Length: 85
Image (tube, rainbow, N blue to C red; front, side, top):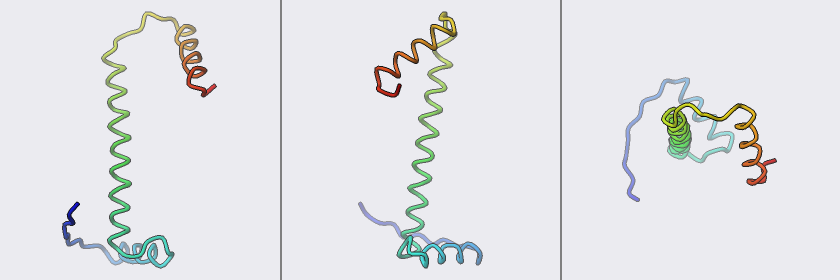
């Protein structure tokens, strides 16, 4: 994968924060810290999109004919099968 060079401007406060993260030994340089932040943002966005799709799937499925106790039993059975209960 090729690399792309970017120029980014930070406030003094932001620059001090980045330097503090490097000084703490968390990262070796500014680029490493910024790539870490981009990966975090990508993961957060992916989680958001997954949740959004699940909500839309629920909306699209319509109103259930099952009673609340029936739904709870289905969830409990599914959790037992998955080993989560």
